[in-house]
Structures are given as C-alpha cells and as structure tokens.
Image (cartoon, rainbow, N blue to C red; front, side, top):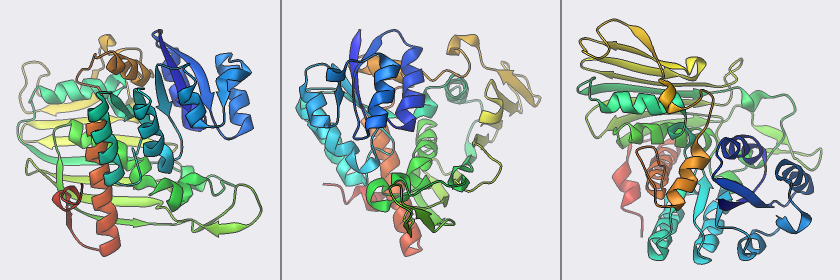
Length: 360
C-alpha cells in the first residue's frame, strides 16, 4: 500500500484526485497540507486523518516521514519549488498541470529527477479515462493513414460564474497563464500523445472579464490571465492543428473534442458522448467503411472513472505503459505553452525550437 501525501487540497484535489484514489486500492492518503483551515478540515473528514497528519507547511509534510510519495495540487507557481524539495528528500512526485510557470523551471525539475533517479508523474488526465485510452489505441493502429488535420477543443463557462472572485487562476503571478495553461496543457499533450508534435504556431489570447473582486475583500482588481486562447499549429508530420480554448463559452459546462482526419478516414472523441468514438474509414477490416459509433470496450474500465492515481502509483513502482504521463510529457506541453504565450505577445509565428534552444 503506497502512502501518499497531498499538498494543496482545493477543488481539484478534493474532487478529481480524491475520486481517482477511491477507485484504486493500492494507495492510502496519510497526510494533507494546505494553508486554509477549511481545506484541512475537509481533508480530515474525507480521509479520516488525525490532527498530526495535517500540515500548513509543505516542507513539514515532506520531512514528516509519513509518506512514500507526494501529490502536488497547489497553484502553479509552487509546483516546481515543492517538487524539487520532495525529490531532494527522496520522494517521487505527482504534479498537477501545467507543470510550472515556464519551460525552464520544468526542465530543472526533469534534470533533478534524473539525477535523483526518481519518477515524476504529471496529471494530464485525458490519458487516464476509458474512451480516450481507446481513442489512442485505435489511432495507433494506423487506420487513418497520413494525418491531415487535428481539431482540438476545450471550452467551458466557468469564467462566467456569477460572483466568481479573483482566485489564483486569474492572477498571472501565481498561475502564469489562464486557459492556455489550465486547459491547453491537456489539449497540447493529447496532440503529442497522438504522435502529432507541434513544431511551430501562431496564437492569440484575450481577457473578457477584466476585473474581479478579491477573495478576501470587496476591492476589485485586474485579471491578468487569459480567458480564451486559439492556436493554429504546424505539426512535425506535416499535418495542421487548430486548438480552441475558452472559459467564457456560455451554456457549456465543459465541452472537449478531439477530431483527427487522415487520408483514410476520421476518428472523433467528444466528452458529450464519452462511452464511444465516432469513426468513419474508407476501408477497414475491423471497423468497416460506414460512419458509426463504436462503443468503448469494458476492458478499458468503468465509464466515468479516472485512473490517474493508479497510473501514478504504478509509476512509482516502476510499472509504466502507453498511458503513463511523465515529466517528459509535461515539459513538451510547457514548451508549446511558452511558444503560444510568446506568439500572442509578439503577434508573430513562433517555432518550438526557439523555446527549446533557450533551455539550460
């Protein structure tokens, strides 16, 4: 049984991470760290923890000796700092996405992990759901032939929630970017996972809700992270990619779509119908040649399940597979995020090599 300490117990940890650990019997949450008393009280109840397993200082949790590994779910500006401390203490880590504030600090985590010979898992959640895993396996059969177009979308209305205050996600000093990092890291990574690496791009970003009330007062302050981002990218294979991101898509709780067109057909995933894939092939012995929905096989796990925590624990035990999300996945996504930020700021086409060449 792997003993896990969670650092940062906000919404993501208290919902997605908690539920992912609950469907896996190979790990136990033994300690939680957060600076907010209410978060610690929730964690205490959620995991039946004693007071001496609750911390307000991440270093104290890591140094406590209670944990075999730590799961980092803090604001983005703390991810790499905490990961380095844990790695230096000899603990494997899981890090929420985006991994850091920029590619350089993520690269430094990668180098330290290699030096310490410790695994670093990245929470790129779309690797760890039944239908997206099925998508990956169907794609890897090569039935599409040469890839022409990739259309990737992640839009939601969360930026329009009435009364939503200036939490850390809207603060560039703590988040680095808005939907570009928060949602875009997943979408960029999915392209990479589909073996369609971005080599260059043009991006635009913007802010619709320009002011919000501070969390701790009635004072209003400026929003400094993007509400939307659009990326038009060239891929290493010669294909093109369009990535659409927004948290101001009114009436959409969350819509995620991955659509890939090739010379021999199309594969489409939508979370609106997550129990199967829309496919159409010109000719396929396995799937025929008609437009159809193919159901996700039961072997991929129960629908609605997120198997991220299981994959993290397996990685700490040296068991990796086609779905494992490593620091390499996180760094590749972060490099593209940096390129998109540079493109939007300078209003020009930016190559991935420009960002890679700056790493040291």
